[in-house]
Length: 408
Length: 157
Image (cartoon, rainbow over all chains, first blue to last red; front, side, top):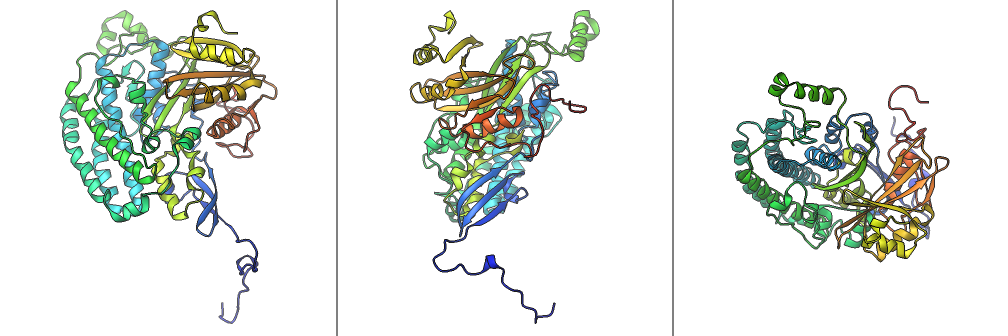
């Protein structure tokens, strides 16, 4: 175009008439914004740089998992739970298995319980590492991401060793574990966990006293404790606001009462204190893994329940009874007594709940998943309204949500 | 009316004392207390539970479809008391035609999204809800996927 053509200034961009109200600007953040970790969309209304209204829009990852539970038999459905929260697959495996085991009234042997604790704590480390790396990258600290993914790789290798899978492990089964713990696991876990606390020191060296990090996070994203409880927020966010509540301590499941660990808390309730809480949680998880490693009991890895757990290969070839059970479990699945249970556990993000209703058949009548990310995200408007747009990234990063867990 | 074995249970007895017409039935199974509430009384019962009995947290709200039985729908609330480490499950039964119940968002603001989800997937309407829209599915979606007459495969009936 030639430079003689002048474009008229559109009406909306013209200077407002004197005395008129300041215009607000609508901003659509996401669903592909790099800092939203998945597909979250925030409709923001801005007055200058201040947010006056925020409307989260979710559901982009809704896959109807709760419906799918109703057409899979109980054991098959374990694989669905991995896909809910893809950063903490084993926590979801565990919660679902505990719920169904409660319906069945199964006793899980100590080896399986301790292995479950050890692996869910490694999951917590894995999840917190991804959180820390991506949160830091959002705020501008690139190198932390590389450090975190270095350790995460080690954890994924341990998962692969156990289950053959790096992410969608499905290693916990109703009645125990899927496979015998692999040969050489002690060595692999020990090498990792002995080195890990010094790695946490490295992250802290990069961030904890970093002036830019403190400037971007301290006092940002504050929400009072009463509002959090009212809005259903759980997990590290609550603990960073001063509430010492952790399901692992208050309602111990899977032998957590036999482990010695602290529940870290802070009182500021801002992004920085959430960072401090999660860093300390990593140290505590490492302690738990170490205790599990050192005190791992001997014994079987599945419950003594032939109607639920697949028989040994060897028994199947020699015993008629085992062959019949195998045939029944594989073709039909096992029947679960009618009833309903609501099982909660502490996932890296907060309280995961599985509400399982059985009508006495081989498939669940209804499974409802209470994802911590879903409830936490409901609190986003309360957290960001009135703050600056630049702080939204830090605020939502500190929530550590997974959209798969939110949308299911 | 509470069954005999629940009259001794502190929470159940307190609820019955608060409003005996609201408590329709109850059971204690696998260490979990379930109380069925008259749908019209849900907000007052929840208010009492939160402010007088200390159930400060609403963990989740969801629905269950018992098609083809009547009343067809159940709305299920899971409440948690942090001080007493106690859980409570409330249920309200709603008819299959035009299921509607009062929203508990005025008691717990966190109920907002859970009720939207129940509306979206079951078609249960929540009266006095501040923003009752679909949350998981697109706004123009037809049907309610978690209903039992909504097919998983094949053509929809």
